[in-house]
Structure formats: structure tokens, C-alpha cells
Image 1 (tube, rainbow, N blue to C red):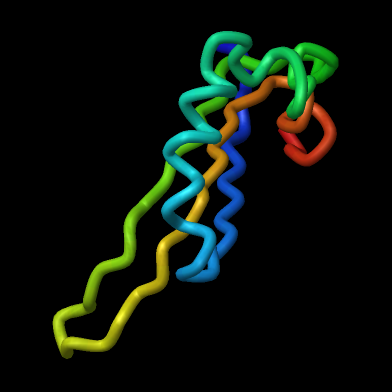
Image 2 (cartoon, rainbow, N blue to C red; image 1 turned 45 degrees about the vertical axis):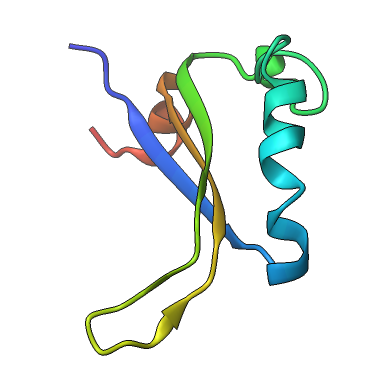
Length: 85
């Protein structure tokens, strides 16, 4: 079995920039994450990558959770570097 490592990066988005993100994501989707502006094609051993927006919401206590842009990747290359097995 090939070892893989998942990495998730979350960036909180200022409220005034949230409205523009769906348009930007839609415009970026035809070329996908493989090419600009992300160029993940250069990452050897990449199994998959996903970029998505989580809209602002409230937690169970009613406290706001800001909108976030999330990048999730799974790769064999990082696993080779970081795993001890």
C-alpha cells in the first residue's frame, strides 16, 4: 500500500471579501488547481486537491464562525518525507 499524507489549509476570509470568492472560484475552475494560479501540477505525487469556500455560520453557542477558504490535498510525496515507516 502506498502511504499518503493529507494536508488541510484553512484561511479565514474577511467578510467584505466573501461575496467575490464564488465568482473567483468559478472563473478558476475551468483550468482547475493544476495550473495557475495554484500550479499544483508541479507537486510530484499529488493524489488529489480540492479548494472550497465555507460560508460564515454560528457555532452552537451562537458565536460567529467566519467564512473560510479551505485547500485540502493528499499526496504521496509528503508522506515519503514525513513518515517514519
